[in-house]
Structures are given as structure tokens and as C-alpha cells.
Length: 344
Ligand code: NAD
Ligand code: UD1
Image (cartoon, rainbow, N blue to C red; front, side, top):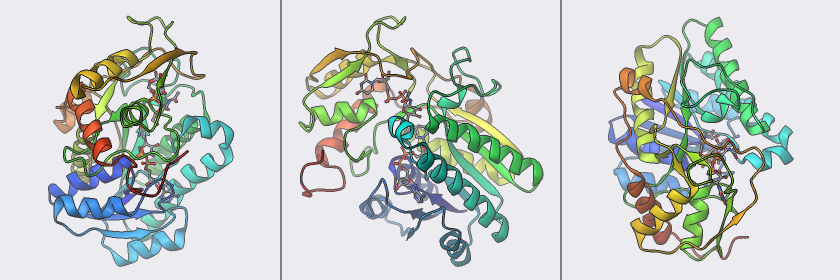
């Protein structure tokens, strides 16, 4: 199949592109590079030895998206293009709603015009909200989110469900990611946040490489075994494999299907710090700080549905995730922007 990756130059999109190409699919990338670099596309080509058609395009822009559908015979769209910084979404809610929801609407409209019927969506465990019991299962109702970013995911899931209800030809796969970390084994592609990282693993990696002084752990008084929050961390290559299976599944599926993609095993913030230290032989300086607003004490996935329906399972462990993160970070201390000077 030919798969359009909206936001495909980003962290999860670039790893998925490699796995799709290795599985024999063709890949077209549309990205405005608002949170990524064209160099990621060069590296995807280098890793796979295959050509990627790429467009610098804002996926909210219907004219730009129409052109992509006109110039390529697309069989399936994966929608990664979104803003994802939780704190920023609280400061700039309108920008988040505009970007995340408009990209989805534009893609749906242009797909319909072009006769493209398969849509795979990057959703998040955040849609389970505060009300559901752990582990999260796909049959649970969506909950309430603590921030606009989370609400955009809830709203986009609802928009996609309504669209599929109204159009029996439309197939939608909602992939609810837990906490993706790690990088391609080669260290050539990886997570490259701009500015100060919001998420735990990129922060640890930047402490390890000397870009940050120390990690602050957000709270050690949670009702968890060591007092720090627990999450379901998943290797980005296992997540990428989940996308390849979702694309294959969408070929013959009908309606909307939801899959959790997580390992089902929670690890605490301290587990991550200590495993990173053990896997890489590096000390991570850290101090305890106050809780971060909106953080839940712990959550993890029940991913049995993905195992049963997609024959998918996460194969890489926490050591692998920590080793591969460091392999990427040490080879690319400033991410894709080598030699461009210090970031803030
Ligand atoms: P990322 O920022 O690395 O990738 C997103 C890509 O979309 C970037 O390359 C960015 O430049 C592009 N983009 C944003 N708005 C665009 C627009 N209007 N037009 C074209 N391109 C645009 O993020 P990621 O970690 O790869 O996440 C991909 C998707 O998965 C996002 O939708 C995110 O919300 C979702 N998600 C991520 C996580 C995570 O922990 N990384 C967890 C759950 C869900
Ligand atoms: C966060 C978002 C979630 C989003 C996901 C991917 C919140 C509340 N949730 O998930 O909606 O889908 O990112 O973008 O922001 N931590 C520290 N110090 C740090 C950074 C993180 O102690 O410097 C802790 C956090 O408190 C948390 C854990 O590490 O307990 C993981 O944090 P993070 O990587 O930001 O992921 P989530 O908060 O789970």
C-alpha cells in the first residue's frame, strides 16, 4: 500500500516510516516541520535504502493536501501531525484546538474527495482521563482530561467516530499510545524535542549528554511503591510495528477499531532513572521536586486486544529502551540540528 504519513518527519512518524518501508509499503510524508527537520526524511531513506516522497506542507491547508492526493495514489493515511506539549496547550489552547482538529478535518475532507477510505489516528492513553480504573481497556468510556491537548485527542476520536458512522466506506483505527520512548537501533533517528523537554526520557537523555544539569522528579509522595509516578513505557520501534499491523488490518476492516499500544508493565520515574544508569553506565543527577499539575499517580495498558487481533506484542524491554535512547542521543547530542549552537 501507499501510506501518507501526516507529521511523518516527527518522532513516531519517522520510526513508523522505516518499518512501513521495510515491510514493503510505499511512504509519502507531509510535514510542516514545525516540530521536526527535513533531515529526518534523509535518514529514513538512508536507513531503508528506499525513496520517500515528501512535501513541506501544513496539513490544515486543503489546497496543499489536495495536491498530495492528486500526485500520489494513497491507500491509507496515518495522522501523526499534531501539537503535543501538555503545558503549552494550557497556555495556548486555541492554537492547539485549531491545529489538532483542523488537520483532522482537512484530511477527512480531502480523503473523501480523493476516494481514500483508511484512516489510522495517533491517539493517546490520556483519553481514559481520571475516572477509569487501571489497567485501561478499550471498552472503557473516555474520561475527562486535565488539559486542552488531551481534549483535542478526545474530540478527534469523536469526530472520527461520527465520520465513520456517516460514511460506511470509511475505516478508522484509533491507536492509543502509552509512553513511547527509545529510538531506532542504529541511533540515526530518534526523539528531538525543541527547547526544554517536557517528557521524562528526553530530559534524562539531555542530562546524560550534558545539555541539562539535572533532572527534577515531579513528586515522590504518590501512592506507588517508591512514591514516584508509574507509567507504561513502550519502545518506539514496537509502536512502529503496531502501525504496520494497523495499516494491514485497515485494508479489510470496517468502521472504527480502537487499540491500546502499551506493554502492560508499569515503571516508576526512579525505575527509569536507574535502568538508564545501569544500561549505559552513566550517572543521572536528579533531585526531588513538587508534583506536576495534572499528573496521575499511575496508569498502564491492557493491550490484549492488539495481541489477539493484530498479533502484536511489545518485544523490547526497558533496558533496550534506555540503551537505544542513549545510542541516539550520544550520536546526535543536538538532535538533527548538529552544530547549530546551544538551545535554550
Ligand atoms: P512530533 O512532534 O515529533 O511529530 C509530530 C509531527 O507533526 C512533527 O513533525 C510536526 O512538525 C508535524 N506537524 C504538526 N502540526 C502540523 C501541521 N499542521 N501540518 C503538518 N505537520 C504538522 O510528535 P510525536 O511524538 O511523533 O507524536 C506524533 C503523534 O502522536 C501526535 O499526534 C501526538 O499527539 C501523538 N502522541 C504522542 C505521544 C508521545 O509520547 N510522543 C503519546 C501519545 C500520542
Ligand atoms: C505526557 C502527557 C500526555 C501525553 C504524553 C506524550 C501530562 C499530564 N501527560 O504523559 O498527555 O500524551 O506526555 O506527550 O503531561 N517526569 C519527571 N520529571 C520530568 C518529566 C517527567 O519527574 O522532567 C515524570 C512525570 O511526572 C511522569 C513521568 O515522568 O510521572 C512521565 O512523564 P512524561 O514523559 O511527561 O509523560 P506523561 O506525563 O505520562
